Length: 233
Image 1: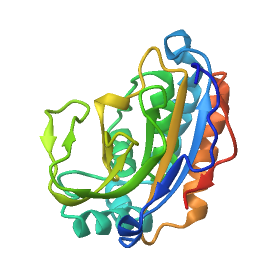
Image 2: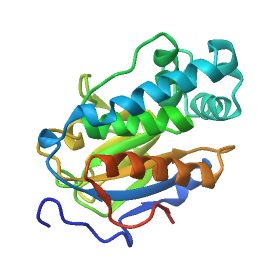
Image 3: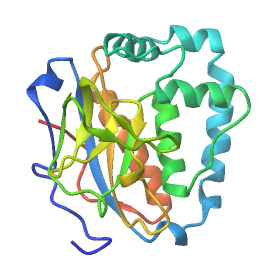
């Protein structure tokens, strides 16, 4: 498919039985638009400031720890062998940075994803669809797959880790907390897949709502959803 064209949503992403057995549930949506390098980051300045004000008025670090959505993700992390006090769920990590007066600005598309994630506490992964080969599957690792994380060294995965892979077996994501450099959004990106990562205790409606929030933010940048956010089968 040419850059900027919408893919078909049918069968684009599926959750395998072994991952579903962990209570994993995801919503996803594809988007298309102008080159990331052509976008004005200032278009989201108002949204970032509004988010800072909202977080400051509603949360403290203590209150954040007790939030039921944060607790659901922390419980899932313990279940899959990740210590959430060392590797925090992305929505919680973003909120903590905002409470300390910082918000990461990467590029406008990633910034939009971070705003939507912090607003809902739902982890949202963004993947360049021109760097991936659908269909994509969320499944448990078989052991030995190589993962190339953003900002980290390649590593071989043990068996039983929830991963998002494309049809070639390229590991795009360690669910629900680390993304691969191979499918990262960059200056030349014109099509993305957004995945809202759900765990037991997080309602389907919150996952879809997180992507609806993202759709509104991307609309400010001239990007459009290819279809309404949907839940993966």
